[in-house]
Length: 311
Ligand code: NAD
Ligand code: UDP
Image 1 (cartoon, protein in one colour):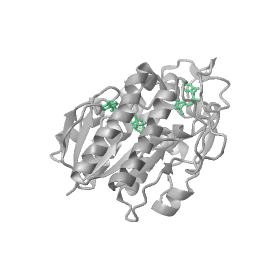
Image 2 (cartoon, protein in one colour; image 1 turned 135 degrees about the horizontal axis):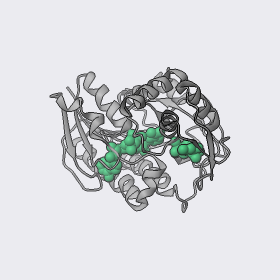
Image 3 (cartoon, protein in one colour; image 1 turned 135 degrees about the vertical axis):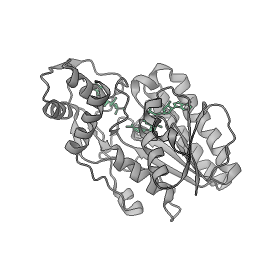
Image 4 (cartoon, helix red, strand yellow; image 1 turned 60 degrees about the horizontal axis):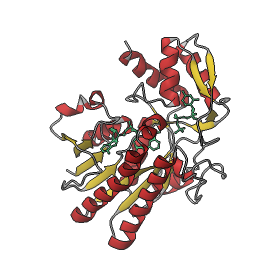
């Protein structure tokens, strides 16, 4: 039985990951400061003997003996990561330093949840792992983008200098149950607005694109990356290459919810990437991974989740 530390385990993706690892028969320690994490996400897991919750902030050192570390702790929604930009940068940089020190001490394997944001507003499309990105170092998204880029650097240098077993994944927009209805992301906003009959907020003209991956597919890819035997350290893109405009997504949600909500066009926030689509050929080749869930199936499950929690 492996002892696995999951930071950010009470968040959206982290809670699905903890659940899957427990189902696989592992012991899980979920570390979270509950900045954006929610007890509801882990309520059922708390009853399991193989699950342990540790309320802690990863910017402070911690000593936990473990075999593997999945480092997911970091607010992911622009609204949340911009709320305290300096704290966000500390979470990425000091947080990964603390986790890498743990990995070094206990010879544990460590996986870092990086992001498609390391590509910034990409000039290469779709984005391959070899692309270095187009990132503004002083914009409103920089605390997140540059923090994640620095974390990738630290991962790579701990691997080169100390031989720490590292894995880097670059996650593209992911959605599904356990998203926080108030986190301000496009999927949660559009669904909650449609269900309440409120206006659907579209930032800009809605022609910007994203590629949305259902959370179960992502978690499958994350675990495959941690467990790959070839010592493939990444980075590897994990996302669904099916690209669509924000307008298209909103229209699908209106159709699936049967809502009469109207579209309301609002100003586009600064540095909002114009397009984003992962090239997943590395994930297919190295991990034998590709997403399986079609957008309609994934949105239906997500709409069911929001309908239930909003009752
Ligand atoms: P989330 O906000 O739901 O979860 C983040 C979790 O980290 C929360 O439980 C939060 O309380 C915890 N956390 C934040 N700061 C912390 C700190 N200093 N110490 C301890 N815990 C802390 O976000 P998510 O969507 O589940 O994202 C999880 C990870 O995946 C993040 O690292 C994020 O950057 C990355 N990611 C997510 C997406 C996406 O589309 N959801 C895309 C790219 C990358
Ligand atoms: N967006 C939108 N309406 C909303 C929330 C977001 O039009 O209510 C847009 C946002 O400007 C961006 C896209 O949807 O172009 C995805 O936003 P999200 O915050 O989900 O993720 P990210 O920008 O980090 O990819």
